[in-house]
View 1 (cartoon, rainbow, N blue to C red):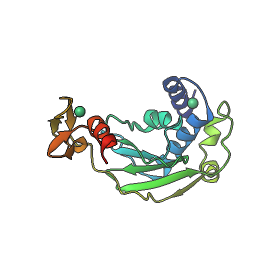
View 2 (tube, rainbow, N blue to C red):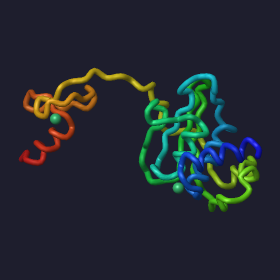
View 3 (cartoon, rainbow, N blue to C red):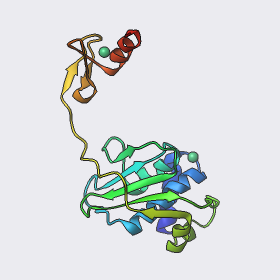
View 4 (cartoon, protein in one colour):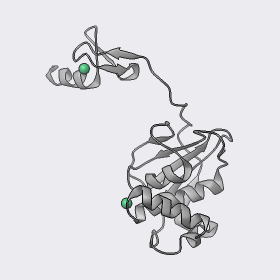
Length: 176
Ligand SMILES: [Zn+2]
Ligand SMILES: [Zn+2]
């Protein structure tokens, strides 16, 4: 088994099944690696903004190490099979969008990673969204209603009270 095949098997293990969606993310990652210089020695160097929350992002997590918890897997939901990739150190980026028909995920994975094949399967261009800043740790505040702690970024001020998103929405519904 070669490296590409081994990586693909890892993705299938992580995702739980073999499917075309997973292959889309896998091949987008392979294409991104040929377009963007990622520093594999640096934690959190590769960042992905996915435009969907489908199967493919599991492959991106495995191949490029982008994860939600590290703030390096983010979403800009358009429902398109499109992903933007950023290398923090190299300051390079690309946006890759599926344009062709995905091939059979059970077949020639190595052949699919051929640059010519990838450029027919995807359109690639520069990312449209600027590179997000690194994951930040926000102060926390206690909600004046439910008493639970929430990050400062998620606290809403209403009539001088600090409310968490759930409590704020609840009051907002009664608001005329
Ligand atoms: Zn799947
Ligand atoms: Zn609350």
